[in-house]
Image (cartoon, rainbow, N blue to C red):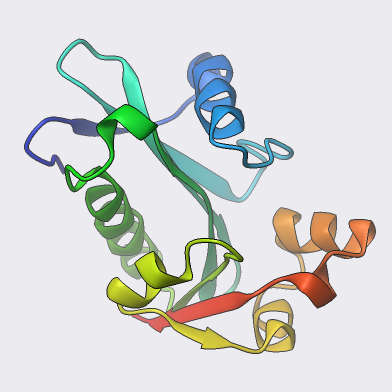
Amino acid sequence: MASAHVTIHEATAGNLRALAALIGGAGLGTNDLLAPGSRYWLALDGERVPVGAIGAEYGADAVLLRSAAVRAAARGQGIGAALLAHALGEARRQGCARAYLFSTDAGAFWARMGFREVPVPELVAALPAAPQVRHYDALGWLPTEVAWRIDL
């Protein structure tokens, strides 16, 4: 899938350094990148430079989206929406019925994309083994998080 200026490719171990730099550069956590049961995609510009990323941690019938990031200079070009559409399409193909995510700062974006805010315990119950859920629980962050959901 591509937006007007990018192509989207699945990230591999060979992309881990670029993936971590992009996600970390957006102020997002880089723990558990490419953990078993997860997939990540990179949006590459015409020069094949990563300008966006999104990840997915799969459960039995739900997926946790994470690490959605677009470089500041590339925002407003539909790259985030293209990455999201790609990740949701892959989740549907994997048999997921719902997609969740945590977001305390970008709620307006997720609402525009069709997500609705839900209680954090709903997300945790749907994806208790997701690496990001386990990480946030270990850090004591779950009570301060905001959860979002979209039905697939």
